[in-house]
Every structure is written in structure tokens, then in C-alpha cells.
Image (cartoon, rainbow, N blue to C red):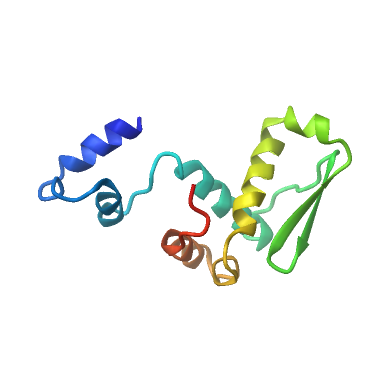
Length: 124
């Protein structure tokens, strides 16, 4: 799929001369690899800032927010790895905790998105 996006961005008039990263930036796109992580980080921001009501209680995981970082404590680590939603949460935490403070303390969802897009620390 990434190859399709690479070729499609070259079809935009005047973009063929640019490298792939430049084409993505000019078109306001992200790689297909980063897209689901970006979506998960945006959802995490919404949940942590009460912009989206979501039940954060899981039987085997305790979610602890300290300052800007999220910490997960597991009662049964083995049972977490088999659950897709919890696996997604665990991988998102790694990226979330790598974000600078100005990104996670954004005043709105749109500000968060803009800061996230300009931030390279969480890159895949």
C-alpha cells in the first residue's frame, strides 16, 4: 500500500521532482505506517482531556497518569498480550510517553494534531 501512495503522490503536477517525505509534507499526508499510531495518539489525547467519554477500566490493567506520562500496571501480563485492544494501548503508551510536553499539553484537539504533525520524537 505504501508503494501505491508513493506513486500516487508523484502524479500530482510538479511533485515528481520531490522526494517522498517532501511530497507527503506538502500534501499534508503521513506514511501509512504512522497513520494508525497518529489516530491512537489523538484518541488518547481526547480521552485524557475528557473530550471523549470512554471507559478506561480494564480487569487486568490499571492506567495511571502522572504529569504528562501514562503508566500502566498489569496484574496479569500474560493475559494482556492476547487482547488486541490492550496491545494497542500498550504500544500507544510508548509513543505517548515520547512526546514533548508542549504536544501533550495542547489546548485543543486541533492544536494537538498540529503539534503532533510537526513533532519528530514519536516517529516510527
